[in-house]
Length: 340
Image 1 (spheres, rainbow, N blue to C red):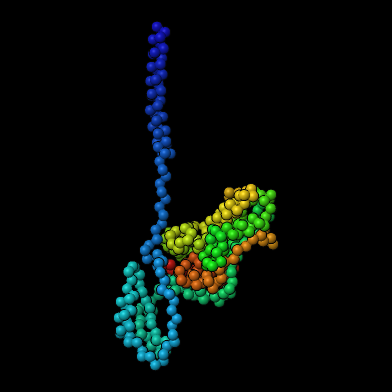
Image 2: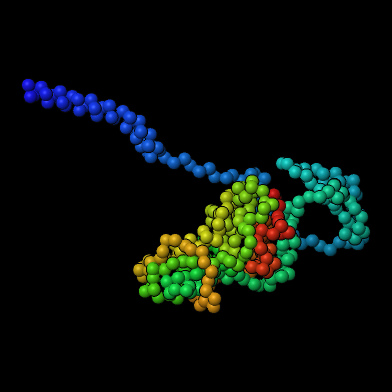
């Protein structure tokens, strides 16, 4: 009799657990399945074909002085030749005027009075402004100064947006100054006993909005331009060593993070500890400089900007020519249209 009661009790318990398991299963299984599923890949923005830089550039050629006795080009033949060459593969309108340099006669005119966005030839004006307002031999320094506490190191942006994450390369324009070199020099200037160190970022050289309200979202998504900061690796392109694809949404912070990692790597053997978080903060007044790396010259950067049609570098040079912190970022006058 007792054995039969135990069997009945066990059967009832099984039934109760079975009843409870059904709703619990419906509640728990989807959560378990979701946890086991791989997260969906974040789609990467694609660069339109018309915005991909050319793989080769035509070598610059020196133009000889015009011969005053040379015959004037035939406007009809010139117009036919230009119209055949200036056909656009994609959307857009083309306008232009060709004037004889000696006589001043108009040889070709296609909607010459039409208002057009200036496109990348605006970079010629940017180059002229940079070379006029800034010394051709000037270099922009990225420095590390002592913070308010002995454990604080402040990375101060100085206008170099062509940094590399690695060692400085004196023969390069992009990567002429390297964050690993800066980290090594910083390590030599500090006492490891002052750690663990906190890396602060001072990117207050530029003020105002980092994005121009007139820039098109599609151009930003395609990497034609991105928020402007006075500190960046590889002109803000996410993938170092390339000049296409997406750009960083916060180039200065990404560069500071790379510096923090480089400093931690440099000091690992000495037992130097570095806080994981980088904090934005202004450097103390009259802070002591601990280390510095310098960019390529303005002349070299201007040449690189023109040859590669680098929008980010052009915007940065425009702000530096306008006085850096005395001129807000995102100014409309220096707006570039980003289609090549």
